[in-house]
Image 1 (cartoon, rainbow, N blue to C red):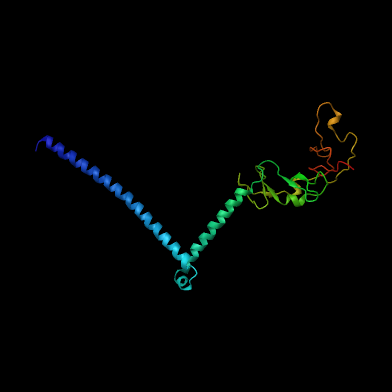
Image 2 (image 1 turned 135 degrees about the vertical axis):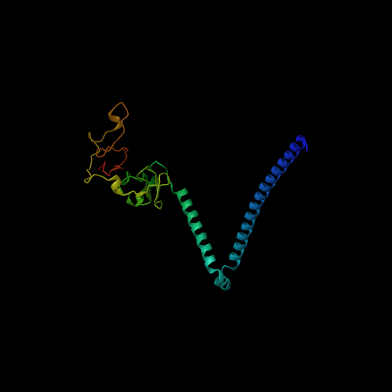
Length: 215
């Protein structure tokens, strides 16, 4: 056999080997797909049997453990789905302080306020509906135990977070204690003389510390 013939044989053998490798890879991929289809078919068959005979005492006497495991996993999946849904709906207004209705007069007030600026009612019952993340200052409904932004445990909006002075001082509506925008040509915000919080001229009480602004 000449050198030319040897080269031809070697080239043919190389092509044959490459073809075998390609065919082997194709068959391996097809085998994996077929095995996955078999597993899926068994799973569907098992689902149909459990759904059809899951309450059959005779069936449960043999497969009760397996059915119980399936039911437990289904219940856990449902609980996880409900938790995810709760987290999706838990965030109220992000970093902005949410507004709520005063339980006494219905006025819109920040939920962090101690008393309603309109009627002076204590807002403890309103605070009880919300929680706050102490780390990133996100606000949530009262059922959210953890912040979905940073993972920190949320805390209730207790009055200790926005505590008023121990003694509230009655402030007369006139005099230097109440700074009004009319006292200066330049606009000056009306502030509480006790805590410095922003208030309105129509407010009877400071919404931050609860100090009475008008008699």
